[in-house]
Amino acid sequence: MIVIKGIAASPGIAIGKAYVLEDEEIVVNRIELPRELLRAEVARFKNAQKATHRDLDAAEAKVLKVLGRQHAKLIDAHRLILRDTLITREVPERIIREGVNAEFALSEALEAVNQQFEKMEDEFFRERRHDLFDVGKRLLSHLLKQSKKSLSDIKEDCVLIARNLLPSDTLSLHETKILGFATDLGGKTSHTAILAQSLEIPAVVGLSDISRRVKTGDAIILDGDQGMVIINPGPETVSKYQRVQQKAMQDERALETLRGLPTVTLDGRSFRLDANLDSPEELKTIVALQADGVGLFRTEYLFLNRNMPPSEEEQSKAYLSVVKAMEPKPVVIRTADIGGDRLSQLGIEGPKSETNPFMGLRGVRLFLRHSDLFKTQLRAIVRAGLKGRACVLIPMVSSIGEILGVKRLLAQAQAELQAEGQPVPEKLELGIMVEIPSAAMMLDQFLPLIDFISIGTNDLIQYILAVDRINEHVTHLYDPFHPAVIRILDQVVQTAHKKNKWVSVCGEMTSDPHAVPLLVGLGVDSLSVSPRMYLRIKQAVRGLRFANLQKLIPRALAAADSDQIKKLLADQGL
Ligand code: PEP
Ligand code: MG
Image (cartoon, rainbow, N blue to C red; front, side):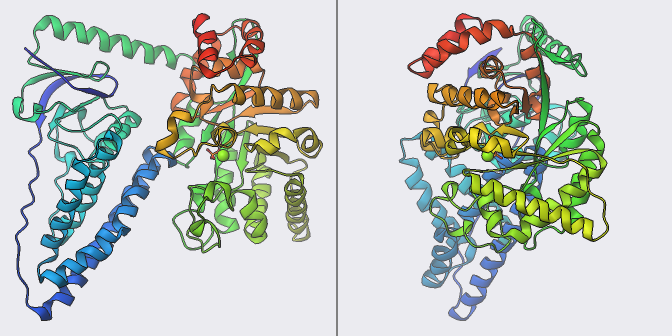
């Protein structure tokens, strides 16, 4: 029995036979080309670039389907690499300057950059070189007309052992029989590790030379919690780990029994527990979870990666399918929040050229500028409202003028439909996202105009703390437990309840079992969580005592920093 320690990249236990993936060596020869062929060589390279862009589109569709929008940023990162001057300018220049083949020019350019990466001390940045190689390998395989070896060729349950796995390899792991993976290279913050976590595949990385120490067929225990791989374990170790695995499975099963049960605290306070829907594929899961509603239907997927905006017909079909499936439960349809990190290719001015897109033309700002797009979406939502309880939610509201503008357009949309002889629902609830500090501060003025609010903690936190939510350099400052965040949340809930308005929270904070006790104590009416965490959050709420948490809030509001708030919760065993 050999035990090798590495870095815990993704939790869970995998027990099985090893499958050692041979390192795919691509051999690149230097070929000198006559001058008259160099232009054609550059064109061949450009074609490989185009083919790689198509690969990325396909990969993006897959990521969106499996993991959601958050992770599609990885593909954006790869697109940026592909558009970098290293690829677009330097490689063609090398081809012409040195009179060589495209494969060689590309591998030379990549090697030069690799050497710079190697010198970097920051692990996060050093790890980004794998993304560069991932793109480089795709380009090379198109140039060499080789297809990449597919992990889906593996036909038996196994623990994958490899020198390295590229993020694109990891993406397809859930479609294979791979129970977990261990690699020589890699760090905790690599995209490969992040993807493994999202796909819930146990993984240990940074094991130095495991790919040479293990042979295909060896018995393996991979412990993704401890960051450990055991080669040819003894029978006692195997049964110990089987017990750990069984316990984890029991916990999962215990969660299953919560389907359909109310989300109520031990002392009887009920909450509406909704699910967030980011893509149509999630609808089946949400229905099966018996969620109380869709608390946030992110409609952006309908608008991204296309040149023409979706028609009213296409949209109303998409909204109807969700409204009908959930009926009579509420479906909160958010009008598209394009802009920020969701760049649209619809040819709309603004987002593509902004230096500070999160502060730019985004959400309701963009749609009020392009009222034709806005009205089409509102008409589609109104139509869906005939078949169930559709509610309209407006993102990125910062001033009363925007709410008035939305109401005008909504009234117009309804009047137009009626004039066309189409029926419209008697009542369509209208809500705003509270995700900009000015909306939180001015809420008392806004409330008479709307029916409900939904707090978007993802953006609200970034704007309260001035921390870009996707900037890796400041993630340590992105802190949902910051007392400033809790104070503003408290103020928002109090203000809304004074006017008898419904308060939902739909940011990622609702999917964090440690943060949920605070939201419950603040007295919100509903939480909308990501489907993956739905039952876990229900379980967490059902274990809480509302009265105790209410008492905790004044102390959290008086805290000087987030550590004090976390300690308050920890002292209560939360
Ligand atoms: C939020 O900001 O919390 C939110 C739910 O909206 P999004 O994450 O889509 O910006
Ligand atoms: Mg938001």
